[in-house]
Image 1 (cartoon, chains in turn purple, blue):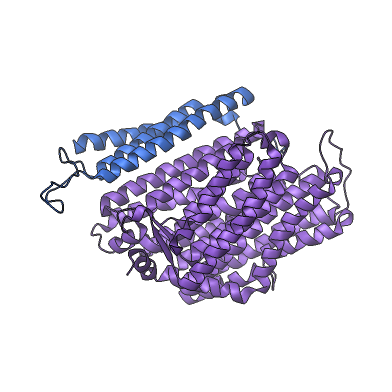
Image 2 (cartoon, helix red, strand yellow):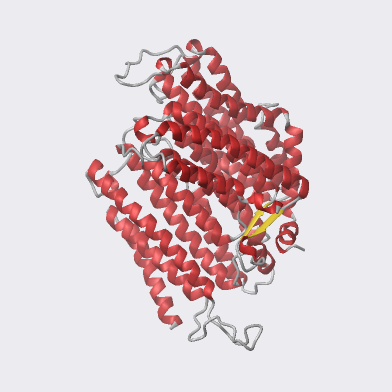
Length: 502
Length: 118
């Protein structure tokens, strides 16, 4: 019976969303359900993580159809960890939503969609079937499209068209790759694919297939040269939505790349080289573009691309040190990126603008909040002993062992670019004297909010900051988790054996 | 049959990509739809076309004796059709909304000239 807990986090989110639909226009009840539900969901995720950590990989065969024939759900340490982080980020954002998103939006099903999105993310992390992966991705897509477009403001729709087109195209490309894969091997179960990939005679077709998957997932996770939709759309919706997108959606794409490539495609030298080159260019172009932007959320959006490059670089090198670095960085990055966008929302609430040319004087007016924000900034940059520093050790050691000196240089230079970009934000928005800003009529400033709302905003940011601090100061424990995940990813037999019950 | 289907799929992909590269929003959606249909046919084709052999085990046997039509691709296509139907209907509503607010069908004029915020 224990294996049934695999599905609980996803199912629970679904029931929350469905329950909210009964209170369509009573947003207060929806908010209560959302917050309490997300906290309970953390408990479920902890249970799942604990079970996986003590008992090893859990496998659930849906409908009791044996492994390659039915749909399999797999929770190994990697999935369970990311499910736990998803639930934590979901909780933080659900605290942030009632304080910042306007009533009008909440009345159009904002919160149910938010929970369907979380369900989709959890599903992607837990499935062991490649077509099922596609279906979960579509659940994510449809809810993210609506969340992005809800409100129908002019700039929102402009962003939504780009986001929609590119993501739908990505799904089509992914499905094309899937069709070829099925034609080659006649199976959809990822463990079965891993076994059969070794037996395929026509190497070229497998290679083409890998390219389809790389482009499809690459668009979703915004790697070079397929990232242009991201900075154009992430700054348009309410900040709560940007936070959940940046913390989860691109990382889910990276998760899919890591999962599928480590199981099925890696081993081919060309693919490894391609992944490495793409990673290096993502790091450099994302980091450089972040220096040029004037919109706070656009700066952060380009930083996402830069740091996605770190993750992909570790995968391209593919030895134990680099993969554990990638996994650790991914855990750190999910939390920290969501937090950066929440911070952008807070800054916007305080100042009424997100334009770096107009911001200023935050440190003088709000010193305590600024210090809270500084912790996150330092973590992103990777100042020891904060969380961004430790995974980079793994990445750099991995690239030294693998002899990938370009990747190592790019990672170091990328950290430097991140430092530059955030130092620019810090000096412009926080340190320089305040500029006279016109007070916007009808805009609710941070100082006008009730104490309860203020504490909700600060509480959500503090919560994610606390998790970040844990990743920094509890590095030994986190590293041991990352190490175990890396061993599981590299030795794909453990995954295969767990699925087939060997 | 395979050849006809293969040509058909190629044409659908080509037409879809051509339509996506046009400037009009409506043509963009039509292009995505064509590509989606191309993918569905591709899954069907690569699942091997077997005529007149339903996947039923005869009563006197324990396993399949002969070649049979694979039911999995059809299940996949069905799922993919339903999903793309949902996405397309959303897309149509979206472009209608965009047309109303931005007042243009031209993708080049859609731009993101303003930096204003929610």
